[in-house]
Length: 336
Image (cartoon, rainbow, N blue to C red):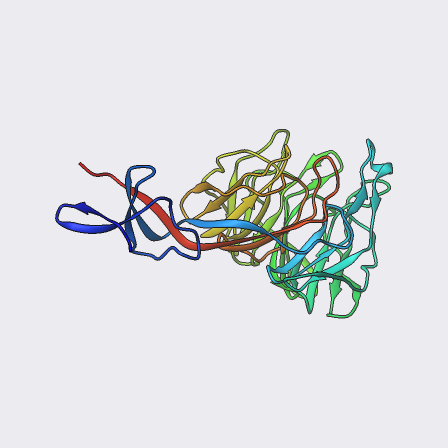
């Protein structure tokens, strides 16, 4: 039998702890007897969620091009061997796909690379940019996945690595920012299914970023441009606009769109996760494994559903983590 706490003539449920994502219901009002606080669950705001373990990748590594959704994602390229110089980095042409439970190796990409970006879904994806493992020089090359094999298509206009990418189809993608040689760039390019075209630059040149969203609603979060960045910019299909800063500056891993985004991990290595509700960033549950240079499902994902795999801390990681959250926020009610 539930216990209830009285408040001005009303009886409200008493709980010893806040509800989890599967229990929470918008509109619930209760008394937390452990903290001595009345609380209310509202829609929107910082999502109530947690990370859980998924299946391991077949090849441990980092810096992939990632695409797809939480339950149907893919990763292409990357690296497997750390070293104090680029010449000691072993890049791969490996390509794997995830079905929500396990990873399966499928046909390799043509051009060995790491620090590339990808967009699309398991049956139709685009991989662009990155770095040649032996030299660390940036890549112009673009490849298209038709569900069974990779084909080289028209190159980027500007070679880049450690850049952001957005797009949910191979016919419409966005490549932005990144590093070219020793310089950080602000250049943005739009893919129309055939060619890349230069469009308006990001406001703050930087690299070591990931992106998220679509070719008309994309995000650029954190990164490095001489120091770790907390800056957040969003793309509306025409131009980039500066938005609310992260709480913690870092080289990030991100997913989502302008009004609904998430960042996790990053330089440090970090286990911190922050969720964006369209107005501000809020720290939510940490990753189980702190890491950087990991990947999400590319351009898809949100503050209620995303995936993270691979990465590096003191070793290369094969483990996958899945973020699931209800679109709720628990608010403490002030009483007098």
